[in-house]
Amino acid sequence: MMGSGLSAYEFLQNSLCMLCGQSGMEFVNRIRDDVIRVAAKCNHCSHVQLTPLPSVEEDEEYYKKDRMQKDTYKDVATLQTEEQLMYRVELFVREQASTLIKFLPDSKDIKILEIGSGFGWLPQLMREEGYIMDGIEINDEKRELCKKRCDIALHGWNFLYDVPESIEKQEYYDVICLMHTLEHISDPKTFLERASILLKPNGMIYIDSPNLNDWLKEQQQEYNNWTFMRTHVSYFTPDIMAGLLKDCGFNHIETYGHQAYSIENALHWFRNKKPNLLEHQLYLPEPLEWINSIYKEKVERELKSGFFVCIGYK
Image (cartoon, rainbow, N blue to C red; front, side):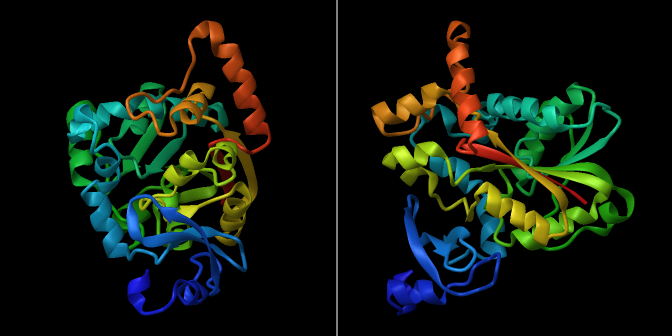
């Protein structure tokens, strides 16, 4: 950031917000794995984003090399290959799938598209449940591993470049899902507008995103610092996300809290002041699950959960 020749204050005052296009930001937090960029809050619309923003080309290269996963687990000996990382995320995606299903129509006779499918677990799990689901993933190795594991051919399109004619002319979906995807996108407006082209009239967009209003960020500084990372370009609140969907032409917008991690995860952060990279800590043993239910219900109701779901209709 300082390499621009401007002071930190001058740099932020000249930085543009990706959502409202206005200049003028204030410092929020350092980025744990990037000494060049910071997280900053727009003085006009209050959106928090990475600044300076990476280019579309930088981001494409970043994800094609899977820098996010490899940087996170670089010190975990059992998570050094793409195949090891693939099986690491399966349980987390199973939890995402169970949450998604709660918001879908009762009929399974619908077509669903996931953008940002990673290793393709969600399309696989949803097909096993009887749904029709396709996926898009720009990382070549992840697409190959998905094909090898479950014979699902994920598409490789990048929506920040264009909507491919082959899909625009032939494929229209009832539901489009973005599971922890939009916060990685340097131009979320263009991304959502192009995604909406593939939705049928009255089709639904379903976004699951990390929550800037997460209660644990307010209470545990090490956790808060950990959540600011190079891979997350945006740090959405439910209100900011709802406004973004409205600006992109979606209607009847609803937001819901989503607490995937158990209270055990929060206790781990308070006790150890670092993440548990070996276990997801999504559930408690069955005799204690009632504690988890109370915890999750409270933070979800107050929209203070670790994640949130935002739904809109075309």
